[in-house]
Amino acid sequence: MTEQSEWRFSDDRGQLATAPGRPERVLAYVQAGATLWDLGIRPQAVFGSDHDGPEPDRAKTGTLPLDEVGYLGAGGALDVEALLSGGPDLVVAVSYGGGHVYGLAPETAKPLEERVPVVVLDVSQARTFAEIGDRFAELARSLGAEDRPDADHDLATARERLRALTAGPGRAPRVVALSPAGPDQAHVARPRMWPELRVLTELGVGLVEPADGPGANWSTLDGADAFALRPDIVLTDIRAHAASFDDLRGATGEPARVVPWNPEPLYGPRGHARFLNLVANALEAERAIRP
Image 1 (cartoon, rainbow, N blue to C red):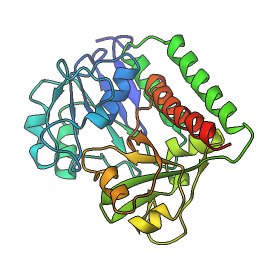
Image 2: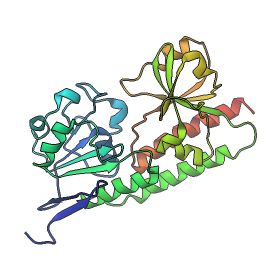
Image 3: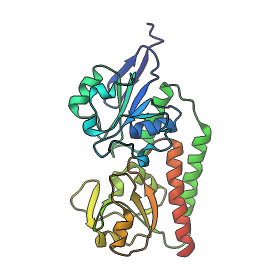
Image 4: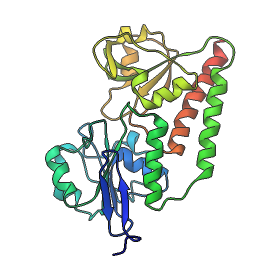
């Protein structure tokens, strides 16, 4: 083995992952796998977190070709042997700080890393969306992905469209991001704690900040208090473990334009552009009826 043929990547824990050659059989946490696919790398298989079940959550998988990419399950169904069943030569995971591997119990993550290289990327609120995206892009390039200027152009166009809409005349629509917890309760996002929501704020979207109180990332409110924030547009959590927004809205009868939101976003340019355009579509429609 020569130094030139060895694959190396330093992850966000400061740990160096190495392999004799470029890894080709990548196992990834579902968010990481969907992002890598967005960047041009097809994972061999993906796994979920304790929030997930025996089937993949379609809100998290983006455009992953699930007929070609295996899903190994989540939570208690995951052990080292299950994770290694397909013979991966690299595992890509995420962390929300402290270097802890999200979705895997420590007693699983540690022996897994003793048998296969593991790369952990930090997706916590301490980083900007662009910083996280740059790290995924760096990893994808190391795995053989080519630059996609068309995707970058689509993202730039989506950003400029949103910026132009928010700079328009008239009252800016009020936008609330939340995760329904049932017909009578919602977890309302604190926008400053979510990298993707901070992007919207930077582009001029009028995201509503709930009052200070318990909860670092969310403020848990009853349905009436959530709608008392007077949203014109609601970004609603569409992950499988979230409750139905229609049930929440039905409890109050409050109207609001709805945009599907995955709080575990894809960090590739195509996925990000799709989300920004969904928000832009809602803003455009709302401004057309509320001068």
